Length: 433
Image (cartoon, rainbow, N blue to C red; front, side, top):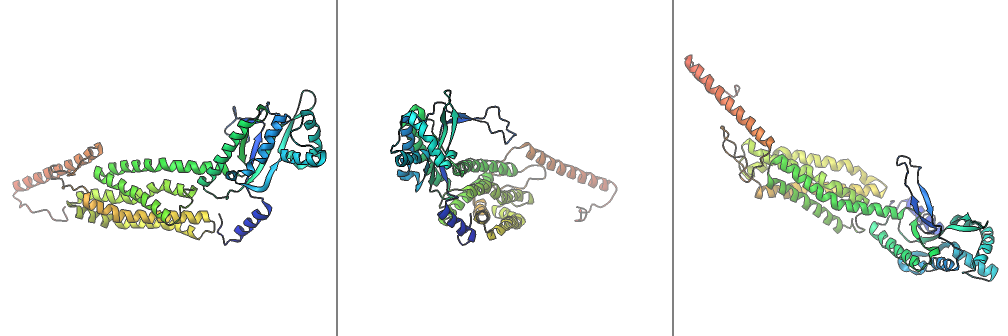
């Protein structure tokens, strides 16, 4: 989040090294079966549901004691779990150490001794009360209702989802192993973390999955938009090809420059999802201007492309520049999140402009459709390669043909009237037209 030279970064680093206040704690939880959120009001953010406790959980069972103690001592030995040395906070491990020092005993204990010696231990070390809750039994005694063990794991706070997924999967495998080896009185083990590291991982993975869906759908929508606007399958295909190549070129440039060394994060995913919409703007303007050049009397690819770039090129350049400059101020932000977004966004707009002028334009020059100007009587053809028979296009062509026919009829009637009156017929001047 902060650059390495910033004093906040240095202070947070020193704090984490010496006080371990911001390090992620992974929690193992026994004694619950999940959360019952049936009947919750989705509009009430305080209606959280009800915790469903596991009535079969019994920490006083000797077999359960052994399983709980293994869950405290075995994970730190697994390097894939990334547990920091001497950073395990487990009540059963502390209780076993206290028993060895104060009672010359060790876990597992008989049920009666476990229930008798646990209260004195909690009186001497009351901080462990936060790691459990108790429930009354029918005989007037108590039982541990839920139990929590905590492990400090080595995960960089801003690590990408791919790095976190490796640690998460390792812990999930460890939880399954511990559950399989545990007796029925110590099962239903779940793991979570106290800094939302796994929730952030899930959000990042959802964004990456959304990129795989949004980008193809956006390309298809852009293809349909250009197809309707230009009524040319060739132009729509060339525009979509240019967009796809721009995305591929941008990703390749980002990988080559080291901007995607840690994979797709939140910022990269958001920029990619809006990229097709941003690139469609210059591409569609050039394509539409190219298709409209035929109505201005241009009948060759060179003339149509020259007309398109001369009429809309400056607008495309100004639009791309204004969009990039509006985000360029974020380059000076201290928070890396904003400056990274600016770098990705501006590089995308620059590459889109380059592909629009240096990739799409040559494609139109080589493969673009060529059409003749419609004749006065409605003859001729609009597109020599393909014509899209949309009702809107037919209505527009019909209206133009009707106007030409009405103008011709009016001119003929005026000429006949003047001949009858003995007036010379003069050619229409530019002002009259």
